[in-house]
Amino acid sequence: MIEVVLTLIVLHTVDGHEVTVNRDLITSLTAHRDSKPNTLYVDTVQCIVGLNDGKTVPAAESCDAIRKMLEESK
Image 1 (spheres, rainbow, N blue to C red):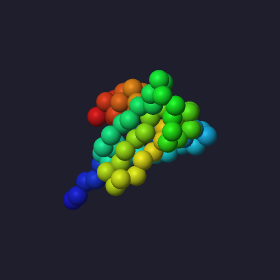
Image 2 (spheres, one colour; image 1 turned 120 degrees about the vertical axis):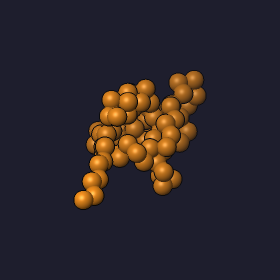
Image 3 (cartoon, rainbow, N blue to C red; image 1 turned 45 degrees about the horizontal axis):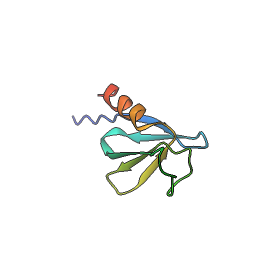
Image 4 (cartoon, helix red, strand yellow; image 1 turned 60 degrees about the vertical axis):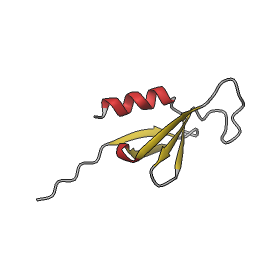
């Protein structure tokens, strides 16, 4: 018997929609810098979540909050 376990975390886009992400696919977290204008996304994006397929998820949560979710999901 093969057992597959996925651990998913729920993030939110800046317009409030939920995005469910497999925690094992996250490769990087890039925080918004308060000292510089956000040139890639709207100002309400707090963290860019990088995935192993090269895609990104612009999240309304802070990178610190996402790190905490990742730690708690272990």
